[in-house]
Image 1 (cartoon, rainbow, N blue to C red):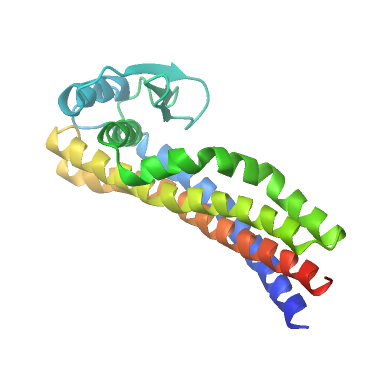
Image 2 (cartoon, rainbow, N blue to C red; image 1 turned 120 degrees about the vertical axis):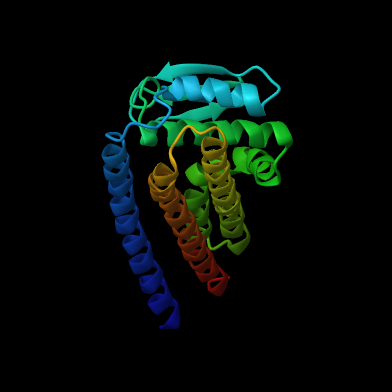
Length: 232
C-alpha cells in the first residue's frame, strides 16, 4: 500500500511541477515583453553590447549572429558562436541587453573552465541517452522482472538529474556575471539594474522547476524499478 501511495504522490507532485513550469514559461515571456519596452541607458543594441563585453572580458574570438525564434538565445562552444534571437539581437531594451549579457556569461564560463560547465559537458551524452531511453529500460525491467535491468534505466536517468543539478548553478552564475558586466560598463542605469535582474530571475525559475521535475521523475523511476525486485 505504501508503494502505491508513494507513486501516487510522485505522480501528483510531477503534475504540479509541470503546471508550475508552464506558468513560469509564461512569466518569462511576460517579463521579457514588459522590459522589452524599456530602453537601456546606453542606447546600444544587444549585439553591440555583446561584442563590447567580449572585447572587454574575453580574450578569444567569438562570433555573434542573429538566430530565428523568440528567446532562442544560446552559446555554442563547439563553433564559438553566440546566437541572439531576433527579439534580442538588434534591440536596445533592458530585457535584450540582460539576455545578451547572460550568454556572454556562458562564454566566460567555458573559457575559464567553470566547474559546473565542465560537469555539464561531461554528463551531456549520458543525459541525452537517459532522457530518451531510461523510462523504457525501466519498464522493460519491470515486464521481465529484472531489477538489474530496471536499475540500468534508473542510473541512466540519474545522468539527466545530474545534468539539471549542474545546469542550475551555471545559469545562476551566468546571470550574476551578466548583471555585474552591465553595471560595470554603464550599459544600464542604476534603477534599470533591478529590471534586468527581474528578467534573468524569471528565466532562472524555469531551471529551478526543471531540476525539481527531474528529481521527482528520478524517484518515480526508482520506485517503479523497486517493484521488479519484489517480483524476483
